[in-house]
Image (cartoon, rainbow, N blue to C red):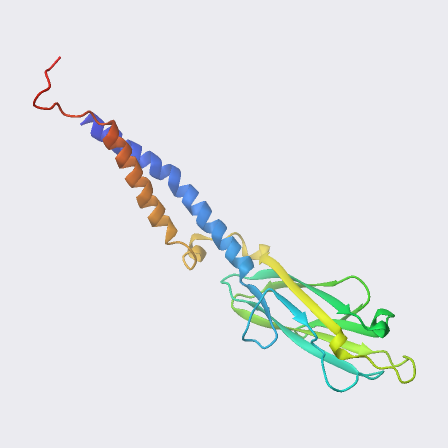
Length: 219
């Protein structure tokens, strides 16, 4: 009877050790899922973590004073709000753009547009508290300076924009809870707990004394 209680105690001890480790692993996986849920799209259907292309492309020449815009959608498909950073980098080989002839601006949703220079370092756009399961438009506007040289044009195919997104669960949302994790990998918890119990029982069975056989002589 004593060995049975010791076996049950060993099983309980292993479960007490494995249970918090399992919960921590599940919540960590859920935290990673919050970051992976942030994506970009040009059409609102196909989503990726980076967009790179000639977003202002047109067969018509880009004339001085003309403004063109492109919309990139930002989506949070996760169950918690996220804070996202979108890096916008203008990669142009056109000399007019490299000389500062193109002015860019970014606008998140209906917020005021924020200008930046195409020939300078990439601009970081901060999106805070993007709600769960929501989509927000990020508009990039480009204006060819009206003071450019007479007859100057820009080949829009040479104006490439590269956008990348990174982010994580918003601090205001607090740490992920067990209820949140129920929509993620919570199924791992009972699997790991059952596996731990099985290992404990197997170890206990190996430690139990072997009953004497017919040919064994008592000592």
